[in-house]
Image 1 (cartoon, rainbow over the protein chains, first blue to last red):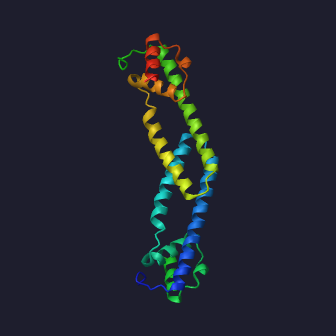
Image 2 (cartoon, rainbow over the protein chains, first blue to last red):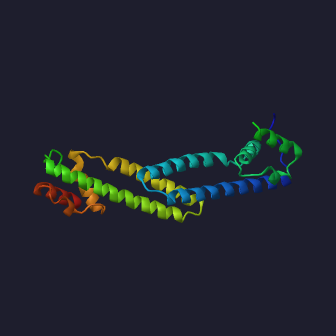
Image 3 (cartoon, chains in turn red, purple):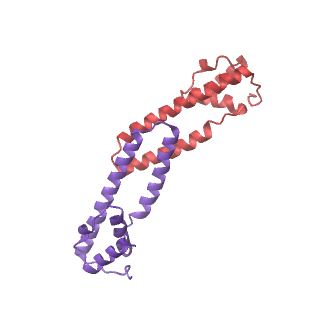
Length: 108
Length: 108
């Protein structure tokens, strides 16, 4: 499947950018909420270092994940849909070819 | 000042071990309380990564600091007193020479 050299119209770029930002906002807000909850239950040093390990992993994951690059965007959208941060309906203004590719990638 | 080849009587070892554990408990409890408080005010990703940086630094510091080794104990006790995790009165069963050395180190 050829997905990396896809052209993006101006309208699609607007939709893609908005979806990217919405997914990012959702994931970050959920992460903050999770850390706030985990922290409220801290009682031991092991809990604290477990939180530190969790933050280290999440920071690495998020820093690498939210790269707004058109060649990689279909892959990112598929991942975001699989992880529940985006719904394919939020991308419905993209052309049918892109939507079909994203849908196929979510099934891999 | 010669501090590393000091002999420790059985009584002094008991006092030192208890003081070490008390200071450790105090510092860890204060750290957990601080992280719980900081986490309750998290609102942005920058706050989250600031918390991560703080935990990284603290983990490194605490892992290196609480090494129960007799040659280094006078230095550790001086640091713990300077940082407020121990009071010199809690070491009063140590011999006068050790107490004088600890007191001198706290002024460095």
